[in-house]
Image 1 (cartoon, rainbow, N blue to C red):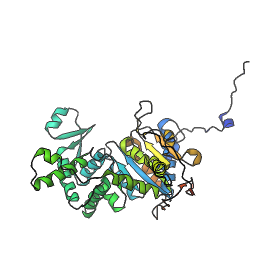
Image 2 (spheres, helix red, strand yellow):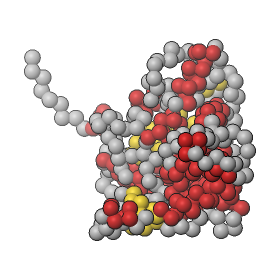
Image 3 (cartoon, rainbow, N blue to C red):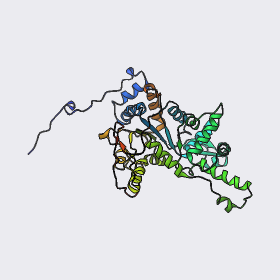
Image 4 (cartoon, rainbow, N blue to C red):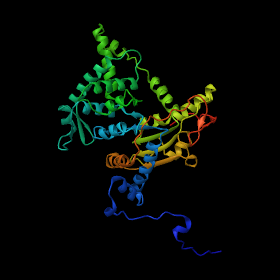
Length: 386
């Protein structure tokens, strides 16, 4: 039987009306973003990200993790990162090593250059220029960074981790009256920086050659013997340090630029605690991210979203479902075009944090959406975690 179509008014079904962006009414960055939230496409998702980010940074019981990938410091976003740390938006950073190395290059007063497309990559190599998309890092910069890193490593004893090394680098920068940069801000504010893929970076190579230099000074000269001289580096110090950080929070938030190892490593803390409970019989409260904001141009259909959508992550025990208070925003855009705008809007309206995030017991039970303890769920860990 044929049923005639109904021509309903969207208000009957509780739909939200869009509004044209009226620039005559915009008086602030936050106001612009709120106007964009009533439009469409990436403008709408960026506007929605403002409210989620504000809720995250204004929640006094929430610790926020900033994850970073892509060439963001060589793209001159370093001061945006530092501002997020300096204003209390961020309480831990998980990053690629390259991003920290390029930021360190800038922090010690070195320069990056705009690439002239008339120069071929062969010519760049011969002249000591390393190209990162449309930008150049001089090889001489990296050699200076290696010397600077060596000074920081000279101050360290015992087993090392990326957190320990980044803190030492930050201290050297903080001790210099002219010091600047992400590592300095993180050191001053007690924000740990983790680099999970540490050997995939200039910093990792610096540690390797630093260890070899010390061995050579002790009389080791054979190349094979030098390669057998390994740094006293233990990545599990990072893993368990971050797990303790996450377990100590009433609620967790994550702000992600790009994806890659930093995003996935930060997100696996919930599944990590889940399998500890299952395999060891403990009853720790598995940390789940209640707030999450991500800026990345990568869509889902290429299979390279680097760590899955937030909805998919719920199935892995990484995020609090929206039905239990989870709040998420994903912006599919180049971070250099929208990240500064978003943070500027947040800075206009965020509440200053007067005290550090409240710690929560990390021994028993989980937490509901209001931060109250609850018993830890038992999950059968599936093989492999993303």
